[in-house]
Length: 459
Image (cartoon, rainbow, N blue to C red; front, side):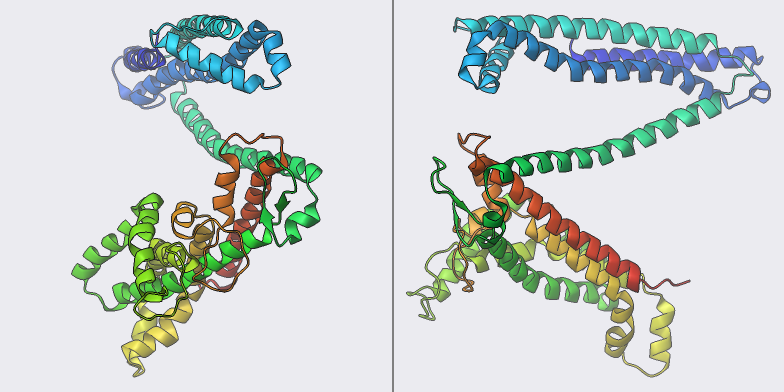
């Protein structure tokens, strides 16, 4: 039975259990809610939770264990082919592809250990899914019967349901935290593996980024990539901070309610545009536009720009993209400044602009600083705009019209293709990711420290 149908059946059992539990509670109380310990709905939810929770937990555990078991069977079927090739993961990928073809009803033309392993994987997956559905539905029925049998007027249904909801909330928070921990641990292990194969001093202080496909004479210094990342992010902030901050001041202090209701959502639409679209905008609009001014044959005849992909191209487009991060957050923070401060300043004879400069902005400054650092973190982590707008050259240069690249762009390029994942040229991507993670984490911690230290609390 497909997983979707299994889930639908369990939900149907839970719905029936809800009705049965509620009805049994009412019957035991003589159809008088005053005789019940909890409201009737809690009895229904108690039965429904007993129907859903054990079954869903079983499905979750099964879906985690079954792929590992199927891979074990496939590796046993592959036998020496997996051990001699040294690339069991590639063979398993072929096995999974063939097994998917069988699951879709298509025949496979290949023969040999891989095809036999695919047949075994398909059979194991099919049997596993069938037994999982049977076990989950049986568990849902058993849970429903157990909870229904315990339902009576004196049963404390509300504390049980609230405890179940509290457990669900704790599990949701734990999943998010454990995911973060898992990402960091994965980065740490692969970073350690990289530094066991490549000197850390050459990585952190090397001035040349020149990986080679064969791993011969590769030079993997991070400084050119780090410089490109910070340079492009700096130009992006030069664009985003003034435009975003001025937009926030206008919308919060000068715009009428009608203009604000229209202007703020339209400004925030910029945050919803995919970054690949911004990359195309940089490639086909901003780059050629800058070339028409700063190239050797441009209107200014300066000869500064040799190609459409440059630091300034990516920086300008990235700055447009992060304007909402500055404007929206700053607007909310400026609006949080109490009106009594404005009224007091205006009452003392200050003009509106003087009130904004000397009262409103100083009061909102910690929050605005946090918004700017958040936008900086977003700019540092951007990839697509850099790939399409800044080029791929890992160089150290002060000229904003030169092509450069960033850490994120090189992470993508190092992990694409057929590079061996155990080579320093592939493992360096994890070290670059770890460095970027530490930088953005530091910026976020700095933003939180600024906000906490200078935060003003108003009554």
